[in-house]
Image (cartoon, one colour):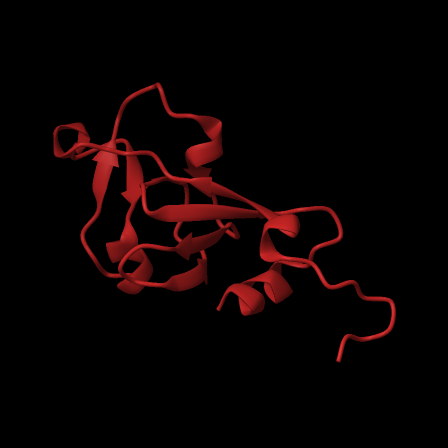
Length: 110
């Protein structure tokens, strides 16, 4: 049953899903911005790799509070809380559209 005043919509009408960047192992460095991979989604203590290039699309940048959805191999959603980073492929940055509550969106994706 849908609450009064609500509208039923598909998930793709509620947010934009931005796929992460495809890094090659040769891109991984010891300093720069952390590369957020599935390992960091499933284990906050996992080792980080970094990228020190200047050619990062702003759409792939992650900051605290961003909603991330892992869509390959491991299905998971989290609110990122470990500082700035760059999203790796097989992860979506979920950007809610106007009038979409981010916490509710996370519950729907879960």
